[in-house]
Amino acid sequence: MHWTVGKVKITKVVELETVGSTRFILPLATNEEIRKLPWLIPDFATEEGRLKMSIHSLVVETPSRRIVVDTGLGNDKEGRSVPTWNNRKGPFLETMTEAGFPPDSIDTVLCTHLHVDHVGWNTKLVGGKWVPTFANARYVFGKTEYEHWRDHSEEPDRAAVFNDSVKPIVDAGKAELVGSDARLGDEIALIPTPGHSPGHVSIHIQSDGEEALLTGDVAHHPCQMAHLDWSSTADSDPVQSAVTRRELFSRFADTATRVIGGHFSAGHIRRDGDAFKFAA
Image (tube, rainbow, N blue to C red):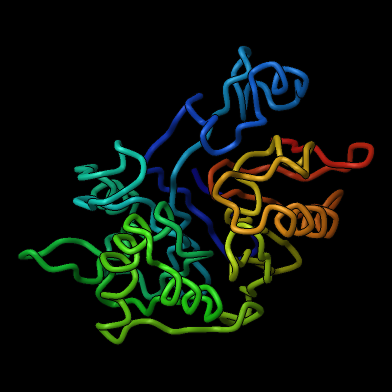
């Protein structure tokens, strides 16, 4: 799947797709409640009210750069809190290469935040050691986000993620820590969107008068546009995440901005009473 924004091209490379089994992340999104939002069907939910979600990377090609935004789960990782995320042997790198993006062609990796399902392919296992997957890339992490997880990864599952997917990048000298409002060239700017994690950022793309927003995990699913208070169980600050959703969606609602989620596909945000809906 790909979209064009002026001179920028965005390609979605999927690692894993799911239907249903998402109650652990959005407990209030029951089948009954989802069926009350018919605009979600069929693009973002089934007729039965089961959520459609994916774990994916977004490859952003500007006139001068080739950027991977978020890197999914990765292979051979252990200590994950979701059993099916452990010791994966998926064909993600082959899929990327077949799409025209061999790992060595990537010059930048940009993580919206440093959760398990957004950093996994930062590294790969070679000879028993975790090495950067994208050997020619600099890895851009938000400074606030990185310092938080560096200092607060005591729990075993968080320590595993940091130690196999973040620390090896820093140790290899490939990490660049930036402010939450940093610019990456003429077309790409970060927007601070805390709440899901302390230093979470979204990505604003502007080129030739066209715009796109890569939300990251401000919302895991478009149902959270209708229910701004439906915070994810993974949100570090559920109150802040709801405030961030309202502010971000208000900014881009009823505009031509193409919006692409960290776990859902593209559409446009529309105002709907006191909240919003998403038009695929």
